[in-house]
Length: 193
Image (cartoon, helix red, strand yellow):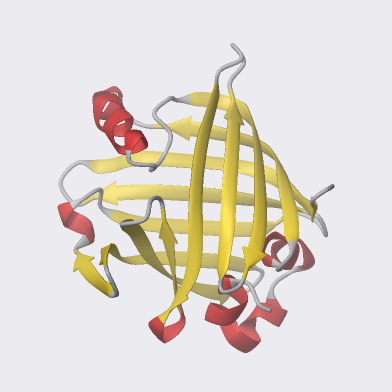
């Protein structure tokens, strides 16, 4: 049983540093760390709406404590993100990852809406590029151009040592510029039962 990332990267998965391999291994894993969540103030109402559909985080913050529990069941990897702000509010952001054609992965934020991304190993880093958004209707995936929704997605993950990694997720719209970003550092470990 492989994780969707192992399937998408194929032989290149072995080129990842240990911390990034641990981040995407099958089984039950936990990433613990912090996030800086950044977006323009005018995006807040849109992010609240998107969050109702399961996407993104509608609140900004610096050094926000974050735990990401993951488990692989069959061909899917389930991600449960728990983002706890200093005032005690916890925001949840869950998704399901699956492998797709041509070495891509799709992250579904609800049963219908997903983001298709192409991962590549570049040196000691893992780079993702957004391909398109998708709407799953029965057995079909209907393509939605990135510019029509939130813009182009990029993610860069880099190992800091054998257990810790840094990540930087950005959404950049061709007209409005960077509309959402979160970046942080995490430690990847097997999840305690």
